[in-house]
Length: 248
Ligand SMILES: C[S@@+](CC[C@H](N)C(=O)[O-])C[C@H]1O[C@@H](n2cnc3c(N)ncnc32)[C@H](O)[C@@H]1O
Image (cartoon, rainbow, N blue to C red; front, side, top):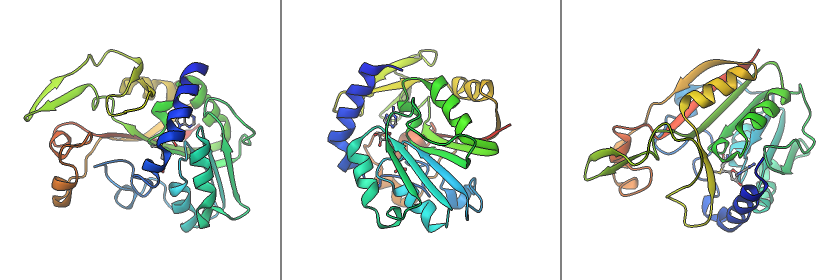
């Protein structure tokens, strides 16, 4: 765990939190990515115990609540995000447990307890993927499912200028980096696809599905023009990596 990076990221997230409230939560997996309505990775969540890693403003938990999940748990580094999550009406019931904590640590989340652990666009922030996936494995019951989405490892390495794609940096390069799209100090971790897959396997997960598709509709042409996740770039490069795995 990199204490200095976590300190920097916590401060930046507390400053920008409001800008991200409800940005691409479930049923979305990310910008220009296929949605849960199409993928149905979660199936029926009625009465299931679910945990959201990097729950942000709690909008994905709200979606789980509307689908009658039995227990709702969330963890997030940012105080501002957790405070916002607590205010969502669906999250006010006694079955919602929220922790302000880095995902690299267990602040008191029960082990062998959850049917589903998921993370929507948050896992790439961890300063220790190994530790975080070890924690998630412990939280799940045997046979429990872990689903995450994160920016596709190719997306920030490839740039698109005037419809010409080129490698801005090597695909082999891994480790911490300053994300170009952030105007605040923010240290994310860059991994290759194989790093996610192999770390899951090493911790006792079975990969069930991997999704790299994009979802491009006519209305996105304008909505996503000249943005970090641009329509033009998404025609050639996936924006989002989605992996569904199961605790063996
Ligand atoms: C894009 S937001 C996630 C949105 C949320 N999952 C949703 O569905 O609405 C990324 C979140 O990761 C959180 N985060 C960043 N680093 C973290 C860490 N090391 N541990 C836990 N949460 C972290 C941020 O505070 C932020 O709320």
